[in-house]
Length: 236
Image 1 (cartoon, one colour):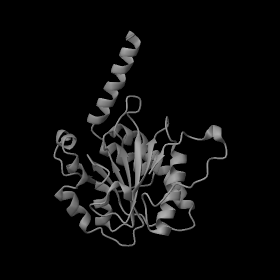
Image 2 (cartoon, helix red, strand yellow):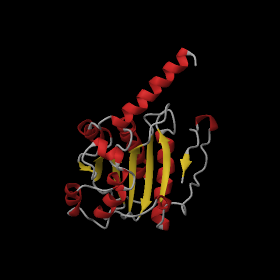
Image 3 (tube, one colour):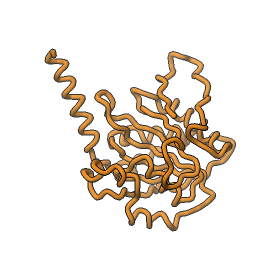
């Protein structure tokens, strides 16, 4: 193998490993969310794993809140909430630090222009969370649907890729067939505006039809200018 190819592989592999073990800077994220997305207050929660090593070894613990986080949500239950946003570092804190705020900014602009009002639950930042943990958060808050923004498993060329998971009627124990996923959200993948367009459509359809997952398809029209379209990476 040529030296430059070997060095490029080692660099990409190191970037992926760093993304997995990176600790999310929650205070910095809260500051950016407050400044750019008008989220003045965000809940800070934690999964049932007590360390990063435990989280990586026991994925099931990343799908459950710890007792303190669960207790913090019990008095916030409101059945009128349409949407709860959960931001989890997942397997790439880097992806959340780079992409969560601009993605939410694009989404909120669309919700503000929506003729149908949206009631938003308090947003939550979860350290060491997996996708399914959002179901517990949404259920405890009483939200009709939950949106999880999470750092995806890093690839050798994409250590900063973020996924969006939408679930109608969240509750503990749901499987992936009940979720819609928009993946590879980042400047080098699916752009924020395009991801927000697809997500807003899915959210509106989920609220209208009261379902999500395999029964809800992405039927958004393609962008008018194919040269401006992001690569198609929408998954169910």
